[in-house]
Length: 362
Image 1 (spheres, rainbow, N blue to C red):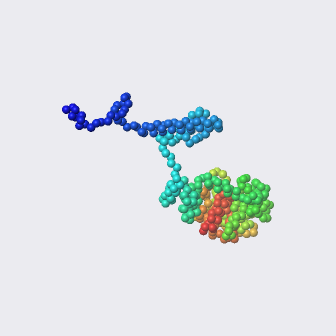
Image 2: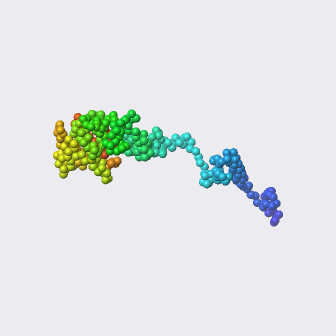
Image 3: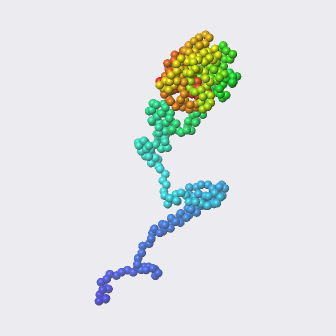
């Protein structure tokens, strides 16, 4: 029976194998060879880059950063690049087509990079600013967009408010009549007093495009109140705008040159000033009517005082300033308007600058 079974079973070819290995056939692991090659190649690359980095150190005497390794200065040690820490993630450089696709998608969605428009390089507010008609809002957004540094640079570029040819000879010769030593009076536009022992007063002319004339004056001092009234009478002024208090923060900002409600009249040299009426307007400023008597003439005039505007600051009540602007527009153009604060350059010139803005933009 055994021989019969052996005859029916097909012959099996014996497998050639080493004597030390089992006779069962096995597959040769191909991947192990590739891994070995990769390991060998990576080791060679590391050795080469280490040699290159050492050569750079030896030639230049200092560590030179490379794309493959970083050398610690003074120690000769190398550290793996950042890509090794992220499990050798591939960093792909975007192609030109990728950039164009990204740019078009951002443009269609209205998204900008770095606060700038991708088309023109202007800020993301440019489209809104070009459509806005409110100059105040445009200015505010411009400052918010560019930062405080932009505002400081603009101030430094425009801080030289007087030309190089301006002189202050008369002011330098009358320092005792200047309230502040660092604020001089320019000769070209100063008010010249006539018929007195001195022709100097710290006041300057400003003429607007529509013909309105203003006299910007410092707040009169005790020693210059007579000169102040001399100027009012000489220049035929009928309106005085006062933008300060007599005393602010326990410091005198202006000498008392007008009578108050409890006093009837005050005399300054040959000029007598009497109070006729004093009211507080609906906007908040104080409006007074005076009668002025001199040796040669007699007239009435108005005095408008704004008390909500601190020195070197903004008005706390904007309606008060708006009301004063309305009063300015009522004054006949043949009569100059005297405007003063304490120094005659801060609040005074701001008010006149606002008047110029009103005339330009309506």
